[in-house]
Length: 131
Image (cartoon, rainbow, N blue to C red; front, side):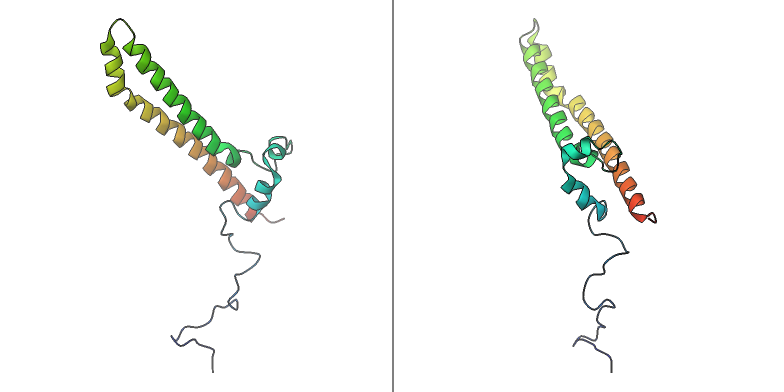
């Protein structure tokens, strides 16, 4: 007689415990990603053998800084336009200036996502290679 639960399902093949070793890691970037994030930002920054990547650690900060810089630039343009010889320029920048702002922000985001995805693929390939 086989072990079945009251609903007629078989127990998992690995005895109810998650499989260890082999198989895909549930963490983004694989199991090695935990070691690289534990290594620290400055240790990864000065890793001259390039075994740990710094991009996943700084991508969020770079996006925040780019967003803040774009907002400050937009506000400077609005204020400069309002105090120019023709305040209509400031009103136009206020009404339409957000369009190029969003386009540039989307381009920055896509570029950062591209670099981040490239690093994650590299980590995944490195994890799957035989050692």
